[in-house]
Image 1: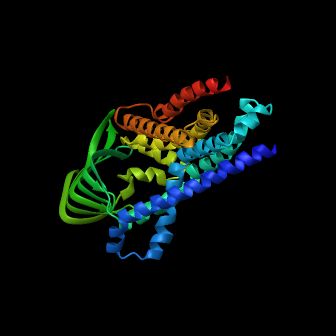
Image 2: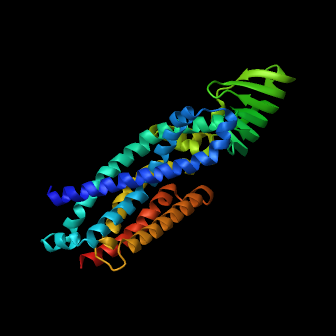
Image 3: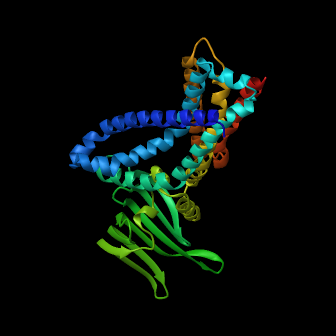
Length: 360
């Protein structure tokens, strides 16, 4: 590796670290100002916020913004080098355009490996602690409407509203079926006004319950105001925050997705989008770096500013596409793998056009 490669790699990674720190500080300040009232009402001390929440939010925002800020860093470094005629000196020294891009891709490879490890393992563990803190001390939309779930084979659960902050299900019902003469026959039915479950065990408290059970001795009916009982499932098995997918390491999330698929829940695509995006998003860094170099390696009268504006526009378009495809995957049945990778496919085509033009 030549001195010029080390020079570019050092400037590229150094610029990225500086930019990500600035953006992270700004994001932390805005997030704290938004949640400060909730924290004060909960009686949380400043040290608790800093140690138990802010560091985890910072990791989340770093993982979220890194691909876009890597893109801006590449534009900034390449544009600055072009304005000082450094790029002209490198290319006129006998280096091909492919050779010129190589140090950027080497630096990008280091950052991609960092993002892959962060996205699959480190950030989910941090997000878990972040969500725990938000659940305890902040207000958020914590309810899920009307859902049928097959919590285990032959056992169907329904609720009209489930609050996963306190694991409380309203208008809760549970029905059990068994095969009789080739048909599924209901032999147990439970209905109650509300069911409050434990987040870690199968203990439940039922209020205003009605139980109908059909056995060898015939039909038995029980009613009452309160019943403490146990089920094979816990509160979180009935519903979780959408953000909770980002709080599971990839092997854990895959296992959870498979379990939810067996239950017949309708949020499988959201889990798949989360799984696939943890690989697709870091991979997009390579595409964005090549695009950044192709649009900024030449010296321009407008200087660095126009290139940065173009970069911001590209980032906005990429964000818009990812949001549209994610919604289409969850609501319109778009294949999750296609939803995650379609942005990379589109920008690969765009980048190829800029690359072929730059090589001429």
